[in-house]
Image (cartoon, rainbow, N blue to C red):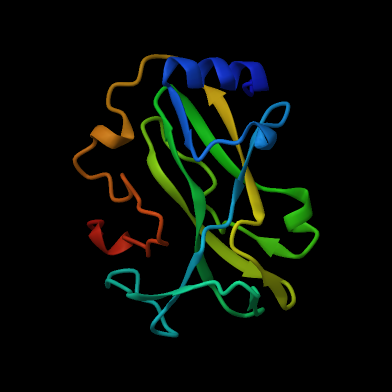
Length: 178
């Protein structure tokens, strides 16, 4: 079951869902539109190593936009900071974004109960496309949780992405033991 617009507003009033900045016009019947933040990043190396800390370089999207290229991988970030304390948030692309050939996540569309931060986007494109800071990029939907949560994500000692800033964050796979 997905939360409706009225239920999202009720949860925001209770403090279990937080969205900043919040704009009522971005609330759909069962989702909330999020926007591309001003910063993008690319990995510094062409070959990434799952056991190594792969560094990234950040850059700001200029006012005239930035052309994303196919066969490249970009990390972006949502303009919105969110907190979700009682529901499972999912970030999906908007149909208008998909129709431009933009994928906003490779695999990480689901958040955890207790996620607090800006969402890092894993962006790839099918053909060159110019993007702009502040453009609608995706939508958050919220699912209720069945059962009590023992430890929320923001309370886990090993939560690698808790409190993400308004800058793209690189993979933290290297922190795992394998």
